[in-house]
Image (tube, rainbow, N blue to C red; front, top):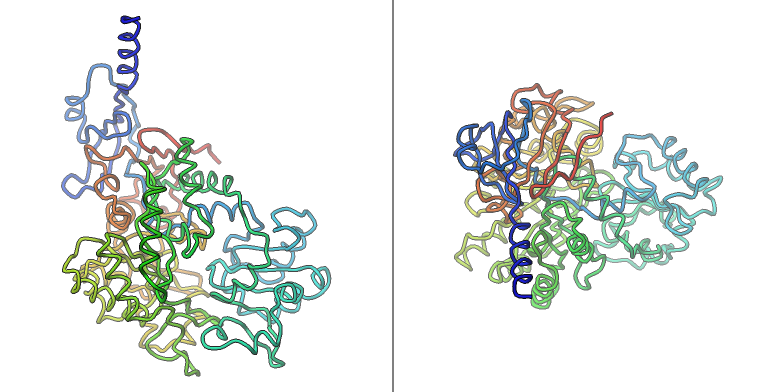
Length: 565
């Protein structure tokens, strides 16, 4: 028995010694500024053990290494998305979904009829359609007419904007949810702004922000996120994404819609094929101390090898597009006295951020309007002064409008800028339903990313999937060209290609607080890399947009391979 025990120990030891794999004859962009380019890469188990030219890598591996010829292919680090609602997006793939396509109302109506006929992707007996492009709401009269007649006169319908801040319910759905004339008349403060009201005092069906909760309360809730979790991994790996920050993985108090348990389940089952950083939606205007304790408990419960609860997500404001107008601006929306909705009290936010930072908890803030950005930076400035620490890389995401006076504050306060630059283009969503309603002095600073880069801000790539595609190469294309169907959105803010490659690798890794593990191909880091069908350092913008990921490797294992068209 003694020798048998020694045999088992030896067998166990040998099986844990993974064979080295060397990927050579490649064009490699490492995202490591000290060694940005290489042509060979060696991996052992989950870790990179050598990077450099052929001879340098050969000298660092053993005789038993497996050599894999990439035949001149282009390799770069696994991509990092600093704002991606992973499992929410995966669940959306299981629903009736128009995926943010520019469809007219008649096309949406036809899709709804076909969905109703097939009874696929419905939410119990309610027809909920996800992913409507926000330009849909400019044709609200047509929506009201088509979805309150014919087959939909008695069929409850709920249309959800791709931005997750806007939606529309038909009369049958409003009746079920109790959105009556009397209910609307009872609302006060900002709550009144979240419901569209017709001339007769009845709802026109449009709802935004927290107003959506009134409708959601009568929907059958999702309880099984297993399929959505698996689909989220496959979807993101298909775009070369091997790490992302899920900003709404749970919600306080609660937590409700707890995605953390499903990420944990994936990890336990060996199906978590991305590094996940998670934040929990907080209520800044409420008592912060119980929320700090709750997030600490979540960290204790869920943190693992590839799942880390970092802290909080905070909503500073809403969205700018007409007819919502809940983004907080420094000047009123055209023709109104309203400057939007500041969803956090600035003084309470400063206190909240100070306490969170002291407890080593990250704060990730949604801010779209210029005033929301300014107030968020003011809160972070108060936090830095109080705690006398610059250590945690707190983040502001979206940043649709930023005033020049705030550009250099990002670097001086060590606040990262998480941009969704897929949206920085000239189209209906940035011109038709924004420009007429926003003062020109604000509008001229829409997605001012190049100016912020030049002011020293750390620019992090992000998608906000499922609000729009998570495809980083499409986002890089629009960041570089800012060209859409209606023209170019301020060419002076176009981003350099190299800056965007770093934004989706080493810079975004900082937003996840994982820069020592991911984001670049360096010895000792996780073996996360992708093989592409073209050299994204040299191709033109149109070719960049069409980039295809051929392989995605996560922790040394291939988790995606392109099957061909």
